[in-house]
Amino acid sequence: FTDICFSTTTIPKMLVNIQRQSKSISYTGCLTQVCFVLFFAGLENFLLAAMAYDRYVAICHPLRYTVIMNPHLCGLLILLTLIISIADALLHSLMVLRLSFCTDLEIPHFFCELAQVIKLACSDTLINNILMYLVTSVLGGVPLLGIIFSYIQIVSSTLRMSSAGGKYKAFSTCGAHLSVVSLFYGTAFGVYISSAVSHSSKDTARASVMYTVVPP
Image (cartoon, rainbow, N blue to C red):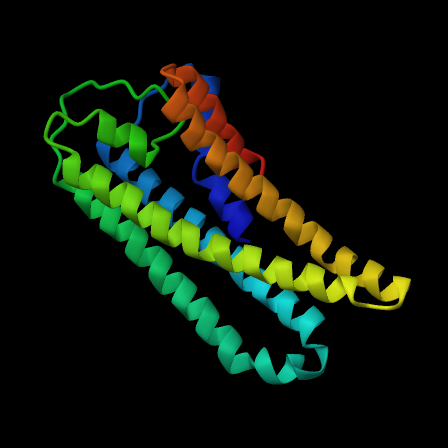
């Protein structure tokens, strides 16, 4: 569900623009798109971490799985994920509202991405940039570290298994999730690396399309 919502925040508008040969979007529409992209990206980020923890408990502590992953904990994880994602999206969106923009601006992108919108501001964007990189580092880094820790424990536990069938079952359980994690974080890092290394807006735009379209 999150994957579908993440894609629908950008792809429909992009297809309409291609069909109508028009690249226009209103200020309100752009800000709304920024907010929803941030919300669903954050939601996907934390849900991937929660799923990694679920697999860690299932493989490393199978006898205690139902005790640890009880309905109360699952509900709490979902609630925290929603609250943090909403707070992150609203924080950045409200910070964009304080910026001044000139009229008839052209965003060198396929959709309204936060970093590109901030670059077009006519007023001082220092606070926005600091906040963007700080929040991205914390809210992106902590779940990623949790995923890495979970899979280190999973691999360690799997290698200690004596039966080949048990090893195959463990790896097959994690295969699909690991593929999504690799695509999600791989393309996300690709966006920031390409924007840092390349000065071409087209290269950054292509990387961002891969980030929003491929993982879902």
